[in-house]
Structure formats: structure tokens, C-alpha cells
Image (tube, rainbow, N blue to C red):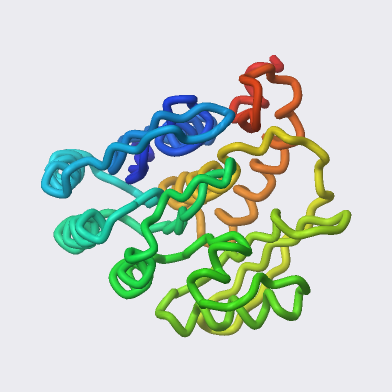
Length: 268
């Protein structure tokens, strides 16, 4: 049976993040990708110049169309900018067989432009976090969700990951890519207390646009193929590390370029 994953997220007209990054990641990982658009962004490697939110009823219509027809193995959720859209997505998830849900709480673009309204943070936590198999915040997103400072040490990351579990998450992948030091360490923590540190050498590059989208969608791809959650997280970490390492072989735009989703294919 063909493995199928769905991404529910915003569109990046520059092609480096959002729906576009998710579909590229699905494809690179050998999974058929379908999509539900929540927003359109006028965006390139330099930043986001405009956002057009999709009406909530049309978001739900897309979900009904996709899930009523396709045998979906996993779902990844990205940019949801408004409370009504968050609520529409939650209703759709509860109404359909979506497979395990990977929630990437997208709040700010790599350029620093806000993608989630401040009023929607509590709704995201209350409505969607309990429906997710795993949430994948970066250090800044975790701090915003917990209304605290950004973690600066691994001990603080552990503490914040535990606090995120208390918000109702079944498991957390707290990403350390925005940290400092020679190592980029992510913490995968489950509700049963199992903790796994995923460490890689930090890569010096400005071309990291779409890393969060790519990692979360790679996890969803693993789940859609029937891999366990830990195996999917490990595989996704290996994939994003290679995609970042190969990013400088691309020449895309004048700002923060994308990671190389097809690094293992284009080199052949």
C-alpha cells in the first residue's frame, strides 16, 4: 500500500518552507503527499511581505475532501495563524482518520516575521496539543508556549520539555537548533519519561529556511510508512542534518536560502 501523509499548513511562495517544504520532504522520504492550505504568504528568502488567511470553512472543506478519499497514514500540522482556523482543523481531525499527528507550532518565520497571532497561542495549546502524537517546538516557540525565558542549557531544555508534556502533549521534540555551541542538540521526551538526546555538529550556514517544517514533515513521513515514533524522529534528524549540510550547494535567493530537500537525489 502506498504510504500517504497530509500537511496542513501555509504556502511559502518562495518554496523553502510551509506546504512546499513539507511536500518535498514527503517525496524525498518516499511518501505520497497531500495538502490542506491554511494561508497564503507572499514570501521569499528575504522575508514575508503579506499573509492571506484561508477561510476556516474552506480549510475544513479541504480536510473533508482529502480524508474522505485517501487512506492517510500520518498528518503534519504547521502554520495556523488564527483561532477560527485552529478550531476548524481540530474539528476536522476529530471527524476523520488522520493517522498520528505531528504538530509543529509555527509562530515566527526564519526572517523574524510573525506567523501566529498572539491571541491564538492559547487556542493552539488547548485545542490542538492534546490531539498530537508529538509536538516539535524550537527553543523560542517553547518559551512562548510556556510564557518563560528561552532555555540556554540542556537542564533548562529538559525542564521545559517536561512542562510541555504537562500541557497535554503525548511527546515532545524540543529542537535546539537556535541554541549556541558546536553541537545542535534536540531532546525527544515522551509521557512515560523516556528521554533521548539527538546530537549533531552545528553547521555554519545562513541557508536554514524551512528547517522546522522539513523536520516535522520528515517525522510524519516515517509514521506514514509505519515506523515507530522514535525511529521516525531519529530518521528525520538524520535527514534534516544532511539537508542543512547540502544547503550551500544551492543558489536560491538573496537572503536565508532553503535546505536541500533532495540532497540524496540531485547528487546522483
